[in-house]
Length: 247
Image 1 (cartoon, rainbow, N blue to C red):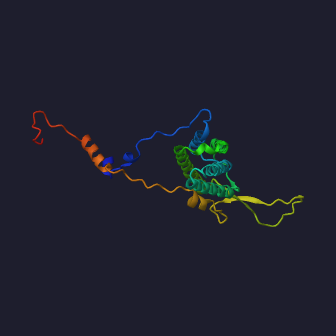
Image 2 (image 1 turned 60 degrees about the vertical axis):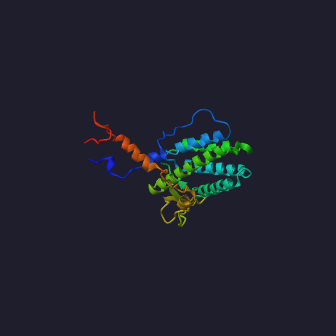
Image 3 (image 1 turned 90 degrees about the horizontal axis):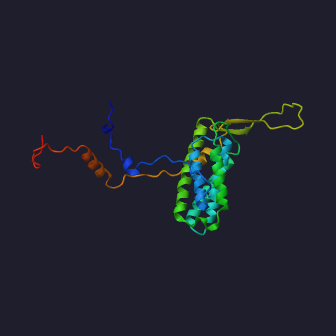
């Protein structure tokens, strides 16, 4: 039998604590930046369902628009943060360009595409002063980083499992089938074949968020020792002197 106590101490619960599973923010659209956060949050949750190639492109384009509009509104508020959003918009613009010939009918992702479109429209309608609330901007950064990470996983999974394919033109002679218009033949090939695009390179080098190096808080080890001592504490037997150790 294997016991949990045989391994090294795990301080994950000390570091992160327990958090309930996130749920959808339902109801009518919230005003201002809160409405954008609502749509982005729901998009992140719906990305738990693998999207088709078409719905993936809709999500990518929605994040391009959200990033572009956020950068414009932060130019006078916080230029440093505005540059980060502009870089994110450029990355998503390149992803939209690289997925223009992407195909794949497996999956769904309709809800994710819908929430992404809602987020883009709400951000476009947001007034210039709608991003003056610094805590809300930070929340938008956190949820958008989660979306980036989820999209990276979706694309890598789709490529590895051959759920996404690249449409290419097939070279060859015209077969003179009698048609007035000669149509270029096309086929879908694996993205990992010699015809692969820059899609995976952009995902791995530009889009994937930098992992955060988490460290246990100072005093976590001593706190865990105290907790274990409290669990294994045995009161002295009745009638024994407190100064005499019990056997």
